[in-house]
Length: 431
Image (cartoon, rainbow, N blue to C red; front, side, top):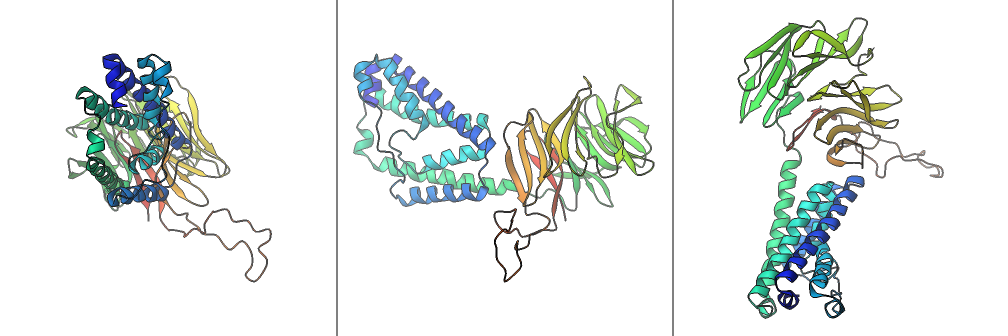
């Protein structure tokens, strides 16, 4: 390949690089899309990646191996730039010719695990760059036999690749579930600022490693503001200085959400009912009702991104995640299920974070706001209840029905409220 690129001169090198880039982007992007629809379990990913790292560290033969080469006849039957472009398309996938390291296979699994076409494409572009530069540099130096004469270079490459895989696994494990505060609940986050409610104490703000108590409960952050309430008195303050900019009385106020232009809250009504309301910060005296009044426990805590309010609605037989656009008045059902409990959505851009509680598992999921694909499982817990054998002991198993693939070990912990930033996802674990 080095000799072919050198023969193609500058146009050939450019065509080869473009082909590699397109091939890698298409292939790795497809892997990310596959992961968004069918996310593999974290254990499966860890086992595959760990096995690949061990193979490369030990210098074992790469298995499985691809015994094919790019079609040599293309070089003879096509203009050289076109042939090099097609060679690049094939090599960009990483699995159409000889695979030099087991890490290449693990990379494919990791891209599926990302569950994001955009993130997987970034990985693919890095892969394409790593394949393009050595070929172009060796072609420029007329050194195509250098690697063949010094095979120890490949050994070093495999060790480095294994080290990168191990580092990725350790970093992933370290980032998977890091406690922020305990006891604590109802997180909110903007940038690196995190707020939460400590039961029986009040609200707290964590900024640059410093924890600051707030003069109220149920704190919320959004854009340039932070909000809390003390009894029925709601305070909206500047997030950077905590200096109040608005105070108003809202009898029955509970959970808060705030943005640059809106204050949203869940309101306790007489008779054991509740609803979600909003007030424009420019006109705080006017309350706008966003939901029908429901029996307590059916409406979730609201979250707010700019003009869009998100909340969950549990009607017993059906659980839904909804959004309400305060600018247009449009209400949208984001997710709905009759066999799973969908809870406490939060949004950043086109990403939706929420809790899904099923018969066999509890999951913190990050998916597309549009509902495309199943999304990624960021964190999981066993279900709240176990299951029996499906039949009486000593009797036939014929006709038994076991809903879970493996008998679950129930837990007393429950995933609850969430918060999301471009870099972090937060969830309350009730104990």
